Length: 209
Image (cartoon, rainbow, N blue to C red; front, side, top):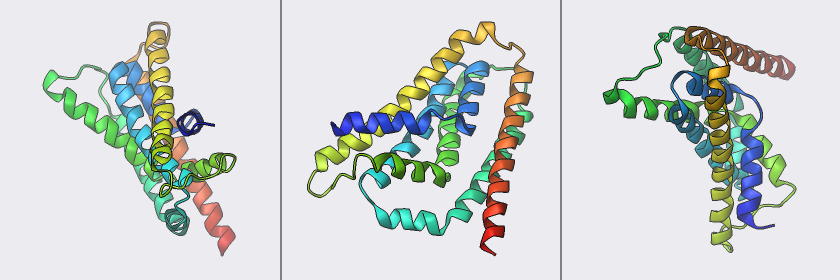
């Protein structure tokens, strides 16, 4: 299979499962519009491409580092989810952004989802599982194939977020129109994901005692 297609398949598979980034993208699409949601999705797509590079190129040292510091990454994920949940809960009902703040807002959307995705070790481990079926690409002997592989992961992930954002925006008029309720509901889901992560971390810590 061509590395680009292989990467795109992995990219979609990494992005598609429902999780915190999906909640954020849907919330952004409902309250701020397509481009805010797409930009947020692109942040996650960059993180997916990095994980794809680690898994698809067989960078075992990076994998070992993530495994060794998995607790720290998970704690960071919990902290980011709580911070996002509080911010989303307190977000005003108005969806408008002043024109002077649009660029700053989009940059924040990108950084927020990138930070959330990059501290999630589960995504990297999922990438390793997916690439196990294809086998890693040797970047030294096949640099073009390696580049196409990583690009494919990004494109596949980005395509999913564009699709999700577009569908949500298209359905927005038929969905919940109360922006305050959307924000509150999104915040609750983010808190739930934080609790799940914290419970998983607590369970692993107890098991290791």
